[in-house]
Length: 217
Image (cartoon, rainbow, N blue to C red; front, top):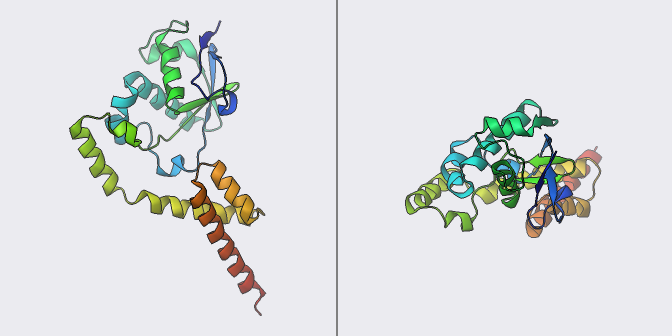
């Protein structure tokens, strides 16, 4: 028996558009690798997520993401869970209909791009992104002010992304990719086009200097 689960618009197998999907009795899980969010994001069990994502996603979704993060931490290569048992353990019932609390909770994860269907598995983020401005605007005033303090104390986001992007671009060139290919790969990983180009150019300069140094007697 499966519970029919309409997917969010624009999501589906591999993250592509799909009209619907199903939550099977045994749910296959895998990590959703995202080089950008994995750098700047927050563990679902972190104080940041509890404090700031909770009012946006709601408690059931946060508890589910926490549990899935723990399961994938124990088995990084993927995990399988009994759907009804997991739902009972989270206190969100064990019904399997499309309007059941567990089905709605999974759909909410997909709607907010915390998970996506990669048939036959559910790929789940192990780190959640910082709140977007549209989410911050929904927070109560005291939380908005607290969020601003937390973000300002964690260091400039742009600088961390640049350093990370440069390291990735250099690694791509080390493995034989050319500069244009590195730029395209960074863009596929979610880097803004201008930043992807900047990091690939930087990596090209680094590699040229290495070659020049190696050719000197």
